[in-house]
Length: 260
Image (cartoon, one colour):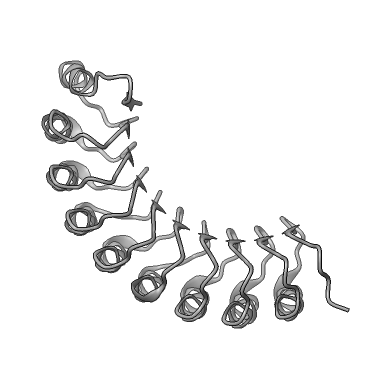
């Protein structure tokens, strides 16, 4: 008899492997109550995520799926992308540290163009690079549901930041963008600053550890004088001068804003 009460299943760090993921995928076809599934650190690999992806094509209850630290790679991301094309309930997807590179990011981007429910995508610690960021940027130009995108430590340089900036000029839903520990540099943050002149939805922007330098910080300072939506800006570890830091604080000096 199918379970009719289970809502959350947390199997964090249990070494279930691909066979365990296969068994879970079969269960997802019949359990009609499960909304949250946490499978971090389980070595499910590509075969495991393929099985889960098949289940997601028909499952109509799961809203949160955590597959972080499972080394699913580009092939696993491709399988999930195919599921996202038809799945209509998943809102939060965590793929942190899953060995996803450029091709995987491109596959996920194609899914984001069609998917109408996903609101949070966590891709931190995946080497998607500039081309992966470019692909995601194209998706952001048309996607109308994603509100949070975490691209921490994704090997994104100035080119990737510029692509994301172009998307931010037209995107009307993204409110949180995390670019912590990339290499966007001065030109990358200048491009993002230009986007902030017209973007009216982004509330939180993390640019910590990006070597933006004084010129990049100055560009942010200038745009903050007119931007009326950004409430939180993280510039930790960017070696900006005291003088420019002061100008940013002055531009950001209301109770609704915070800077780190």
